[in-house]
Amino acid sequence: MLSPQYFEGSVEIGAPATLAYALWSDCENFPNFMRGVVAVRRVDERHLHWRAEMWGESLEWDAEIVEDIPDTRISWRTISGAAASGTVRFEVLDADRVRVVHELRLPAENADSDSAEIGARITEDLERFKAFVESRRAS
Image 1 (cartoon, rainbow, N blue to C red):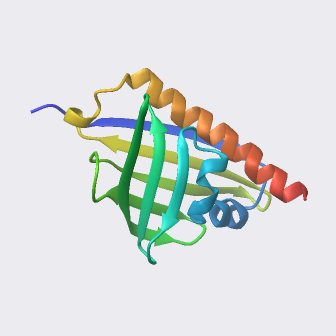
Image 2: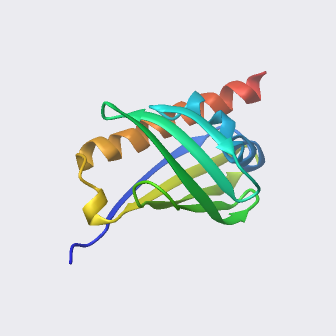
Image 3: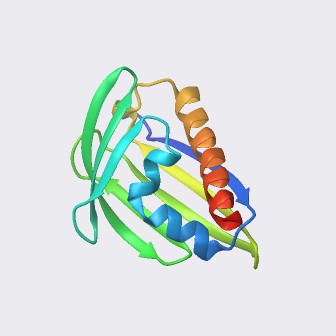
């Protein structure tokens, strides 16, 4: 049996954890910083429906939030589409800085895309999230 693939990226943001958490937890913001994401709709308190254009394909899937600790951590898993799970952590550095860490886990059989590209997407998405959060703080 193949081991699952694990990806992680992090970014320091010049904003309080409460702002970063609030902007990430509003799933309708995802297309603003996640490459390829067309729309994310909250179905109910714990379920999200995603639409994306990735690797030349139109994709849709559903995800379930399995843990949500305000200003600290959000964990999720897919419940339709390709299997995946992940966690986003908000680590307070000081009153005006937070480190956001995004972890993604893919079963080996579902990680058929280039690992380097998946890692690069996480890093790029986090950099865009940093700009998105810091622009909201400046407004």
